[in-house]
Amino acid sequence: MFLSLEEKKRRYDAVSDALKKNHLSGLLIFSNAQVNQQGFVRYFTDLPIPIYSHALLFIPDGEPFLFTPSPLQTYWAKRRAWIAEDRIKLSRDAGQEMGIIIKGLKKGEESFGVLNFDTMGAKDYRALTILCPGIQLVDATSLMEDIRRQKSVEEIDLARASAEIAMLSREIINREMKVGISEEELCAKVEEAVRAHGAERTFYLISSSPGGLFPYVPSTQKLDGVSPLLFSIEVSGRGGYWTQMVRTYFWQTPQGTLLNMHQTLKEIMDVARQELRPGQRVAHVAEKMRAIIQERGFEYGVHFGHGLGLDVVEESLINTMNNNILLPGQIITVHPHLIHEKESLGIWTGDTFLIRENETINLTSDAPQGI
Image (cartoon, rainbow, N blue to C red; front, side, top):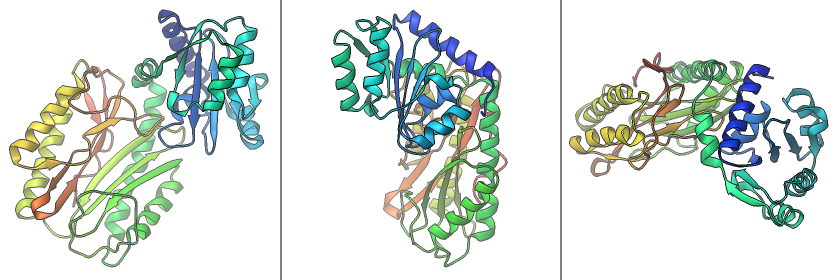
């Protein structure tokens, strides 16, 4: 296990209190191995999900039931997860298993929250509602997102370790960024280094093409010695907490429009750090960033940023429609992306920030904004 039993108790107590307050008898949780879909089950188990789908049934003030899809994952769940062995079940019919348990508890006509409704299979839904035709299912995703937004000391420590791994990428790119190397080869060298230092999962976006406005997955495109290199690494270290660092690397000192874009990004990042504080509306932060971009005459491409945690994208999403209030303990990546379509220029930067009661800390600040 990566986290303590005290952390388990903190989480279970917080979720139990929230369910009671919202008159819910339990949670039905569905996750899969996608980088943005496994966090909910892992939050209750402290167990990585390398492949397939997992499901979990949580009843307030009790021990959860975990449903694993293969003998391999059942084996490791019984050795590493927070869940008691007798509550770990090998099953590809989680909905039916949940229905049997809920019916046995005589809660078949009560209200239950569902996490990740989008990943709950039709087969699971049908089996559950046949066994418990009176059950009321409520989307509780936002309820759990609010709980997960504020990270504990243990979670923050794991995120800090992930940030240290992310910052290794700058050293590797400085050394290996040469004319003729492909995007795939460059990312492979970064991957080798970060894995050796404890990376659990990684996700790369990159652009080195002439006129490449938006980054994408690594390709066979070779670096040409002229076009800026846009590079983003999102990495989770041991324990599964994601951080992100984005940089644009230049072959020579930027001039003209490119220099103006670079200076604009630095200004945006300075403003964002000042505005990321407890009590601030997320929409206000996004408005400040957008105003600078529009004032300078540029456009923005990739969205401004998002929360990080056990999933690579969590609340709060930084956009002008999000009226959530920032909280102490949140971990946020801010990654403004500027484009200038007329000159076919794109530039991107980003860091991971920890919001505390009286300060905001840049967890990836040791890696300067570009070269």
